[in-house]
Length: 161
Image 1 (cartoon, rainbow, N blue to C red):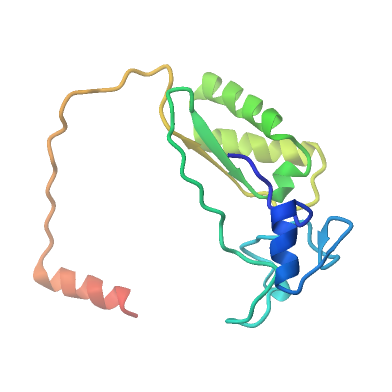
Image 2: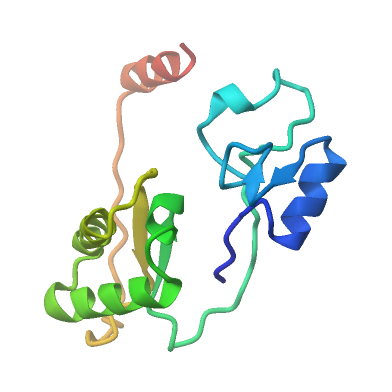
């Protein structure tokens, strides 16, 4: 699943150049080390214009197996200073110790800081199943909640603001 969206990756470079951008020494338009970003609005063209820097994610569908324990989603500040395998080892050790994906994400950030990253640090660790825990196959009773009509209308008007 791991593929960095670096400007010098062949498919990203083709996409960038097709949109009028360029890659200079691995940097998008000579400035940015990634070709897809949620932020960096100053590098994106006005809304509706084609831009070589996009925020659209690359979507992949895979079938998970019992071997797939977790997924690490991180921005380039993490991957600038550690390999995917280093991050996997750190998360694996953390989950064995405390079984807390949020704590593992914090540990990844601390490790990247220790390794002197100079970029954004955002990490999400998604656990698919707890490997050491047995699944509870007992049928769960459905819970039903209700709210008053007035509360429903208040909620709808709040959402429509």
